[in-house]
Image 1: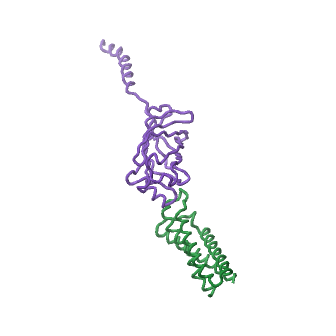
Image 2 (image 1 turned 120 degrees about the horizontal axis):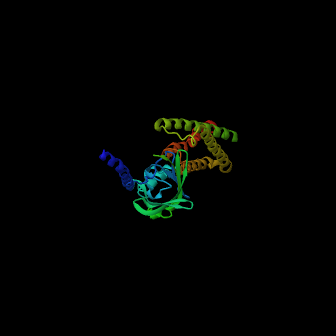
Image 3 (image 1 turned 120 degrees about the vertical axis):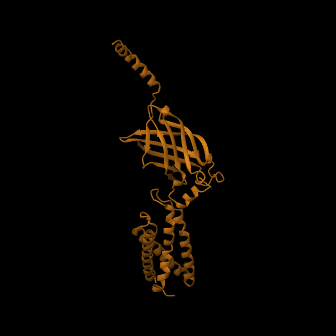
Length: 185
Length: 129
């Protein structure tokens, strides 16, 4: 009887200790997102313009927890489409993207911060084997089924050693437009 | 003379359009790919008729101006225009929703010769030297 009373008295402090101990290992897990098939990665300039497909990777994003949000995505270089077969072949050749040697474009974010117009994803962008610190501004629009990441930014191919021998062959600065609808994973 | 040139233009345009449509079908059978927005019966008939009527106008002009050398000069000019036109399917950028754009030149380039072929195949039926 005495033992039972002791257990009754001890159960509440024990529960409290357990709760505190468990909370030490509790963390907020950022939302994982799955990219829908109707995404677009378009680039435009005076010449050329086109799009990429083959977007893969992990997208963790939570507007209320940017610290644990992260993008780690790749784009398959061989999916480039300018609408012209000859240009596509040239773009994939060793003179330009060298898709055989550098098959993917990678972006891994190191931090995501809130800005007045949306968010900035700072991280490392690797194109053509050259890795550079890069900031991708974006907005996130919630939808009924998930959300849409929208981004628009400029990129200079010469920064990534893409056909530096011919800096004036086609545009060196290209505008990139991303429209990536996602659903909760 | 201009009537016969006109009939030759129309006939060779129809002949070329028919050849294009047949070739398009064969191409689809071989590669199972179609460029419906770019190559369809309407666009094919229109472009071929236009090309052959333009050739007819050119031929009439050459005949009026050069008389004796008209045929020789016209043949060379028509050939040059045909070859020059091959740049178009190579250089054109198709809409991004079109799959396999690299297969487009192989479809379009032979078609650029059909007005030339049609014109010279049918010319003896309408105009005798």
